[in-house]
Length: 178
Length: 178
Ligand SMILES: [Zn+2]
Ligand SMILES: [Zn+2]
Image 1 (cartoon, protein in one colour):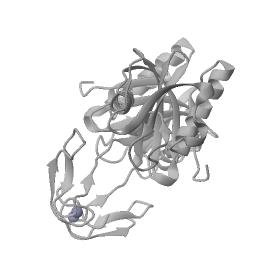
Image 2 (cartoon, each protein chain N blue to C red; image 1 turned 180 degrees about the vertical axis):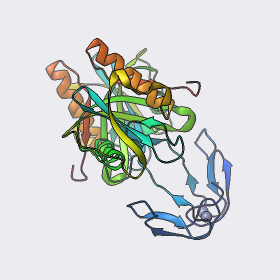
Image 3 (cartoon, rainbow over the protein chains, first blue to last red; image 1 turned 45 degrees about the vertical axis):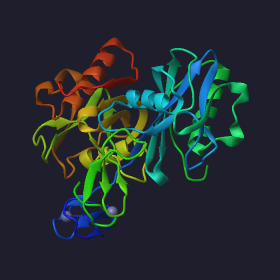
Image 4 (cartoon, rainbow over the protein chains, first blue to last red; image 1 turned 90 degrees about the horizontal axis):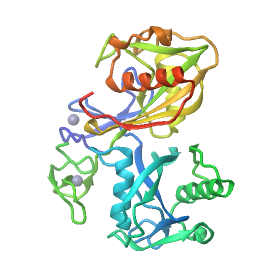
């Protein structure tokens, strides 16, 4: 950020009175501009022991696989965001069944909220941001071609929970080293 | 938002190609500015059957009660944010034990992530944003003087869970009517 989004004057970095972190502060109107982490809502969409993955048609990580996930919008709930992303990227309808994982990525200011969703029918196809959409049995997940470490991490937790026959809520913070 | 934070030129609202919502788009550098929901991390800090509440020293809702809660910062995890807010507002140390509630407020673009935390000692006092900090038994929670509907909602869920002797994760979207 270089300019104030309110008045257009330049901003400088300084620690406002009563604060303890540097912020972008406007030199003209004194507005403090805060930058906050973004929520990425994702969905592990299930159908008869298989899960729905999308091969990305856009950068970053074009050509690699992910479950449907994207930035939450203002005006929707976290569950609605996860279902919307599933509709947009995989043209599939899901009923969200539970929150599965809350994964913080402090180094890039993102929090993944990953839900489980029951597909209402085995109907899906590539949305505009996907090259290909496919149901995978857990034994065939393309582990070496996952788009993002956080997606691979969430799916590894999911596969382990399926193996031991018990799901739990996963709360974790992923470093930039994974 | 009236001006581009990247180049300082005016922005206009329009629906970018391939998108389906109006965004602030820069007339000069074509940058699309997205606005996303913010995460509020909160903590129900527990000590021997009592919970820690703070009376707000700042607007909005000056003088009313809340559990420690505030906007998550970039560079921290959700759990760290909840513990930090407890330290800042109540000068109390907690060990976060679980995620208790994920409450979406779509009308104002906020998501509350409310954790349970075990106080490491019965030591607390008013931080700079609090007038007063106090441990309350559940029978004495000041229900009529709560700062925000979402705080009252989360505490009502908590009190009900304590009464029936079983905690669960609460996932809900609160309308602007509560
Ligand atoms: Zn300004
Ligand atoms: Zn611009």
